[in-house]
Amino acid sequence: MTGIFEQFVTLWVVIDPIGTIPVFVAITASMTAAERVKTAIRAAVIAASVLLFFLVAGQFLLEALDISLPAFQIAGGLILFLFALSMIFDTSKPEAETAEAKKLADAHTVAVFPLAVPSLASPGAMLAIVLLTDNNRFSVQEQIVTGTVMVCVVGVALACMLMATPILRIIGNGGAAIVSRVMGMVLAAVAVDAVINGVMELIRTAA
Image 1 (cartoon, rainbow, N blue to C red):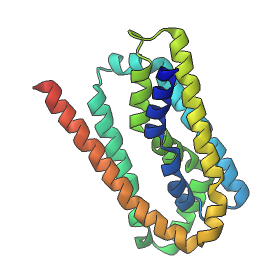
Image 2: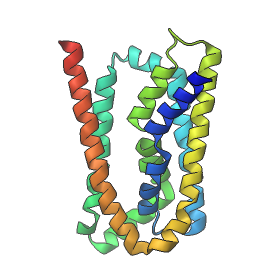
Image 3: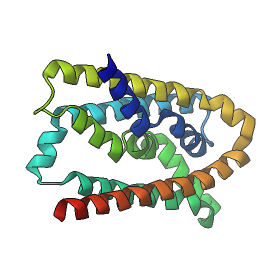
Image 4: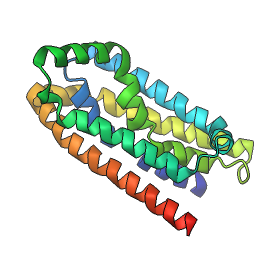
């Protein structure tokens, strides 16, 4: 039971259901309530699918491509940083262009990026699921338990996103815009921290 609790805490931290709420509110501000529900469900399903893929094949994939875990973390941090910049500087785009971009994103890509990846299925979550299901240390039954725990955490994240609708009703679009900029700064800091940690780990392993 202790092992399951430790796995739950680990996956909770890297998936961060609570931290997904302001991101979800910020990027779905222009959607209807029904569209936000569909986006949340789609994001949760995609995130769970990505993490299940890494549970089953992540270790084999990284080993086959000879990719180190720190390098994977650095790449994820850079991608997250680029998204953070887009959140911070969105107002610099012409209004019509921004509206069109948001329209296309709402219909096709927001659930995938940034909600499913890298907000929920973050590089840290992918790494964690690979480490928690190491084929050299854990049996198939233990890996199934880990997968179940992961799905439960993603389910909590889905509930948090669905609860974001009344939050948006309270703060309004103006508040969502402020949240977007603030979260952009926070995400930029998180991304830089991920890159720094990845570089330090590369230096440590190379020493």
